[in-house]
Image 1: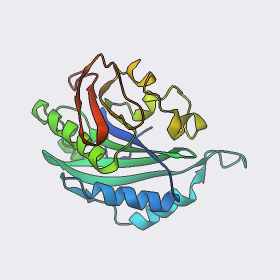
Image 2 (image 1 turned 135 degrees about the vertical axis):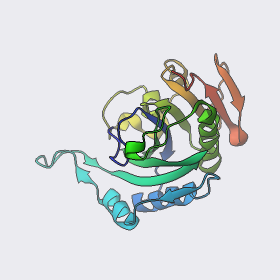
Image 3 (image 1 turned 90 degrees about the horizontal axis):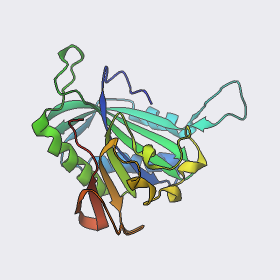
Length: 223
């Protein structure tokens, strides 16, 4: 999905994960925003009308306003400053992708060099590990089932689906630990929560995290 004009050009590095929707949408969003405030990397919300943005997410809007049976979309964008090595612009995207699943996605300007015209900080090679640490800390806070870092790729690519959302093929229980290792090359890192299923064989470099997480290195930032 196209990113907010808060970020321009591209490519965009996406740090995304799936959460189960267990409560009303507004409460879930507020809990997510509260959760990101616990990240060690300082995060500032640039938008002033956060309550209005949450209310718009709660009410949603029709994919096709001329069709009374059209899917109702529940989508949110928040403009952020995230301090990962340096102060940088980011967009927080939250999508209700099925009746019981939310995708949370952080967008960053992914070019190596800064873009001063748009006031965008790039990602230097020596800063790559900081994004992996940011990803790991998000897991510590949210204990999500699955997450991924990708260039122009979000975690929905790890579903055996390929349909536009919202779609029930993206239900929370449909994340497959078997499928996630079949076609992971377009991702840089994947985190899987082994509380749901233990991975017996992992043909990639990986390490164990707290809370039964496992970080799998399926690519690299240089590609």
